[in-house]
Amino acid sequence: MINLIPSYTFDHAQLWKLVSNRNKWLIQIRFIAVTVLLIFLLFVGLIIKLNLSEVQILGMISVCAFILSCNIIFLLISNSNLIKNSADKYNPLHFALTQIICDLLALGFLTYFTGGIESPFYIFFIFHMIIGSMILPGFVLYTIAIATTIALILLSLSEYLQLIPHNSFGNLIEHPLYNNLNYVLISTTSFGIMMVVSAIFSNRIARAHYQGEQELKKALDELQQAEKVKLKYTMGVVHEIKSPIVAAQSYLDLILHKFLGPISSQVEEKLKRVRNRTEEALHIINDILDISRLRLLESFNFEEFDIGLSLIELINKKKSQARTNNISLEFYEQRSYVQNVKGDKKLIEVALSNVLGNAIKYNIENGIVEVILKDNQTKDGVIIEISDTGIGIPEDEKQNIFKEFYRASNVKSKGYEGTGLGLSFVKEIISHHNGKISFESPSRLGNEISPGTTFRIELPYSKL
Image (cartoon, rainbow, N blue to C red; front, side, top):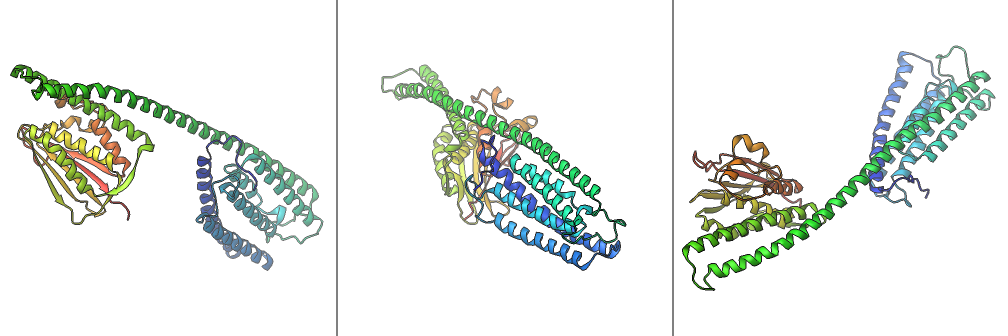
């Protein structure tokens, strides 16, 4: 199998995708061309009345039938497994070459039946050179241009020497030109020059554009690789920071549980604040680690799971935090039937934990948090609503709530710690799972003093 891959191509996946899309485009255009050609045949026969011979009419109809038959075969091939994205097998480039050769053959016969060198259709060979330049490498395109020019010269000379019959395009031309040697030589020479020049210029433009795309893709790949290296480095450093904080918490717990002896209430209060600060620091570290993991695409692990069970487990884990803050935490299952969602279970649980943790953290004393699991309107997914009676979100800051490192003014003014990464991370996770996240504040549980917020997360069911 001839290797048609340009030497300057390094991203073969991008090449196969590009050529495959253009192959589909060629098939679509060919159906249009057949329709236009049949309409043209009716137009010149019934309205202009060019008095085409039976041979010409049958010839043009045969050309239409040939193009249509080939195109149906091409359509079937494009939807089959015959085309392989491999240099040493029949690949999209070979498929494109096959289509263009068939088109040139059909155009050659159409040119012959409509007057040869007198035909208005031979100009479409140049159009095919431009199309070919968008797909085929230069050496193939130049070979086709030269071969097509030689074929037209041979056709014109054969008609001039009366080796084959000439088909005048009806009464369009009063005085024949095919038997004028000077006209034949000038026309075929001009045609050859135009073919070669069109092939060179269009191929160079297409090549420059394609090389630009390849270089851009290479630069993006290098940036992504650098980003992955940076993320892995960040994860390593942050994970090391986590260790001494956990160790400090262990010592604080020993003191607070009086294992090392009694402590005064004043010291105990200060130590509890330190313990809460270290817990907040761990939450921040875990946010950074989770975001880094999400952006390292190889860490995705898709599976089917029941989101209801995950929510129940998550709520049970959060109840101790809720009790510490005197928060009422309730779960309501309202699905009409249970069906699995598909995704990275751990990441989705991290996203839900983040939203639920915020509902508890930014709530008021003796506040309420309600979690509702229900079907969406079209019954092809679930909606998770997490409502609270917390501090809410200021109206003029709602458009910024999912931005990285953004923290609402009422959060900062009340002294809550955080990075502002949580909700941007949640949105990124939900988007990766083809889901949606929205919110409203005040929530349905809120009031004037504590408006609260309702976050609504929608996830699609797995396609079973």
